[in-house]
Image (cartoon, rainbow, N blue to C red):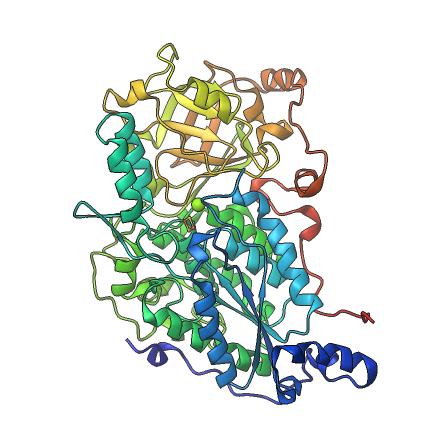
Length: 584
Ligand code: FES
Ligand code: MG
């Protein structure tokens, strides 16, 4: 496929307005001297700073973020495109967030990076920006930060890894959970686990399944913030570089057209992203990130908007963890444009994208090459899709479950609570032979929410106790105020709000309380009276420690609850791109 065939032409170039960068480089006297002179130490001829759109490439490259470790090469392709279109590229680093290494969780730092991005863009002579992101949190962090400045912006994702190959079978990140369960039950040895590591992560790129990184890449494409096919071209495929090159060219035109994020990120665009996330079986983390992005754009979006049941959107993509295939297969089957075409009657087709044209142009010529991987509305992979938002006395502000990755027989379930006060408590006792637990129990994990952990780690798909697994049962109802990896699965209720650490009802659940989950009705309740809940809450003493100093203190003091997107309260909205005062 030649990408130029599927990427729509930009709309006509109107009279250029005065470039923001000329507030720096176009100045006379001492100020202009200072703004230009030091840039010239990089070997830049004078004409590069004389009225060309200056395009920032916001790069999350880091060798500590393996999913983004190939970004210097991609940045070069973006630069080539920027030069070709008559712009001047400047690459700059921001803090990177690697999902696999960062403790206590990369999520703790999403908001910090968004501040880094916002301030870096605003403080510098940039007319437009390319956001180069890949591993889970890097995408929402960069988009959130850029929203609060609102200059022309385009996203280039790093692309997924090639499908892993282990002992003749296809593997990806979702297999880690299976491998671990097999190791626990003695079906897999330590040596086999070690061998599987290199077989899984065998190329550059982010997780090869429809985990959070790929859900985020689909999110930006369905929001209209990227060129078509951004979501699925593998990182190792040469067409990823071609897309980066074309995105570089396109951002220069966007500056000339003054096509900003606020022109693209309308309520309709957010609704498109929600419908697409349902149809791809996207990550539950998508909810938190999209809510935070909407908060920055001041678009009125609530957790209730994610309840896609009424829209009757089935699961169209047969991709792990909800299905069988991998991102590589998704691309060969036609990628997100082919899926959006199958979904088109549900979508807001007129929503504008970075091309300046309606999103329908991104998919109207798309073809599906493998109906095993991408289904249709009439013949979906699974009629159950999307996210169910739950409400009830155990989660007054909401909680979420991903039914397509859960067990159908547990969608309506009543069971006795087995309670863990912290993740350490859980790890310590879960395989204790004396633990009073059976397959019908409901595992409850407290204090893994935004404020309590802090940072809301991905521990919600907690391990099923070994003694239950030994009976052949692999899934149980599990409830927490934490998150789950986008690659995870199971009947897992996440994002319980308010969280235990701020005194939510979750905090007062005790062993033996009876909990009822009813996904078709959308409820999650604990069978104790309001009076009993109130009296138990009165006896609660807060055990949450707030960090004494540093970013973590700021985070714990200002983080909002999951149902609002877990952004910091003072970061809502934006401050625009104006800087009124000079530095010298
Ligand atoms: Fe980076 Fe999965 S660990 S995307
Ligand atoms: Mg993750």
